[in-house]
Image (cartoon, rainbow, N blue to C red; front, top):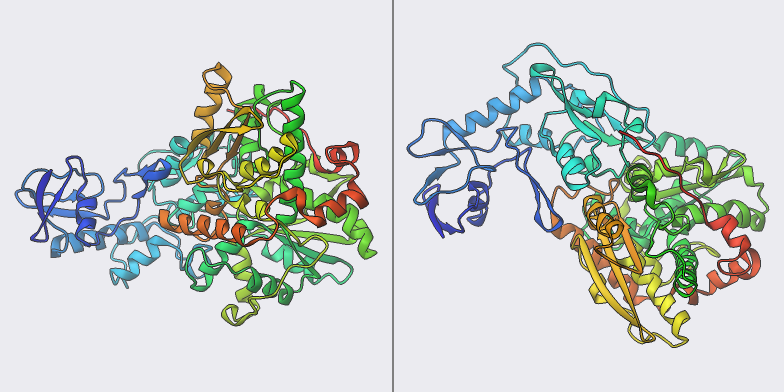
Length: 579
């Protein structure tokens, strides 16, 4: 143990601990900007590039970055001297001197860490005036808007893209004053290996990376009286939306959310959990078919568009392994356009579907040509959890006062507990096993929880006994973890029967379109716990027992995993290798 003092208060910490973590143990706050730590999901950014966390160490004239300086025996640290405070003010002023003065219209306003630090340090005037950087804004992608003029070179995005997700889409461009974090070869994002997982957006402390805003498009659709506009909401949205209105992380706001969506003007409000149940019925059928008939194994889940982009770009030789099932919101789109429209007496081209998703990759996914028929998209527009919160605020709706008992419309609003847990890592494969177990054994499943598949750990492995068969399951969240496991599967080092992969560490609860969690792992844990709690409250907890799902097969889809179901609910993938 290392013994030191911070602001004259003694503390003992293990060797290798940074000054920042030693101070945290004492409850001493040292401001940071570039630093971000999510140890449990393999993410630490400690480049010390911003120098906001500078502290004094007795015996040295120079200041030290607390986030990257290990403690030493008998070190005496001071974090609150005039010298350290003035240094922080100088650093923030220098950053602001080369930063657009557009806070009022910035998408990250009130969520910008640079803005908050400037306010906390009482900066009301800039003493440094000089040349401003000028770089083109990349708005060509359907998911992510990149504005290098707001980049502060913290390199959080670069770290999570290249080291955590191993996507390799971001790089440092230029030298000296002209340096900024851009895309590899300075290409537009959609021409790189970017998967649009949105983790760069989630960790960017400023407005340099944000989602493409589709709010205006959705308002125009709602106000078009020639169209019938309906909406669906993903499972992870209901346990995070409340954070935008001051509620605790993990607060379940399903009823309030449905009520708000009706007030916004949607003709019908549906639950993507219903389509998650349909996805499970198809995916479990596909797994059982492959397992019993010598099909290609392991079968990989395919409901995450960021993960789909990843394997199309970087593992094109494995295109035959993932399930051919569409993602739940795209299945919902096909059902809406071809079944619901007829039930409501609406022409397919006049039926408009909006998806509220925790994910920015869904924006890109909805525009994929194979997910449209004769130019008509199955999903017309996608907004994130954050964008929905903005629309609610635009309407002047008092979210706290909304009826929390409001419920989804039917026939596409009823769902099982299995559909609910889609929003957290491990949930998709657990939901599939709940159904596959009964279909493979002919026996009722007594215990619904598969505990070995739960938790936010990046890679989980389990062996499930299904009627005497040892079924080996893998669960992965985060694309870097996916790469590591896929390379072992490719080499034969690891064998599985089924693997669930989610692009975002922790699953959809940590999606790029969710309220910013600012690196706080406990927020993700509370969101996950809320989904599991909702699952436990459900009367029906298996997808194949959802009566509304059974009805749609009887009236529209025909046989499970049959010809009609394949036409509407399944898709194909294409190799898309990039630099």
